[in-house]
Image (cartoon, one colour):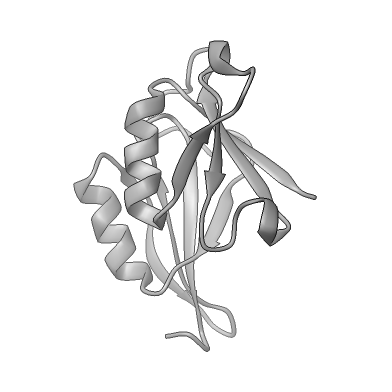
Length: 128
C-alpha cells in the first residue's frame, strides 16, 4: 500500500489547513505520540482506499517560503480547483502556481501550505 507523509512545523495548524482544504480527518497514531504523528483519512486516503498518509512534526527546519519545490509534490483531485485554491489562500496558504488549464488533463494549481510544503490540486477535464 503506498504511503505519503507531510512534515510540518505546527501539527495543529497543518491539520486545520488540510482538513479544510481536502476534508481530511486525522487520528493520532498509537505509539507515535512523541512525533505528533497523525494518520490521514479522507475521500481517497486511508486503509480502505489503497493509499495511506501521515502528518507529523518536522524534525528539521523548513525551507524558506517562496523557494523552489522542496522535494516532490502531492496533487489531489478536487471538485473545483479555483474554489479550493481561493480557500487555501484565505486560510494560511500562499501562491505557488495559480490555477492553470492543462489541455487533455484539467485545471490544476499549487499552493504552499504555510508549513514549507507545496501541495497540488486538480479538477480533471471530465469533472469540470
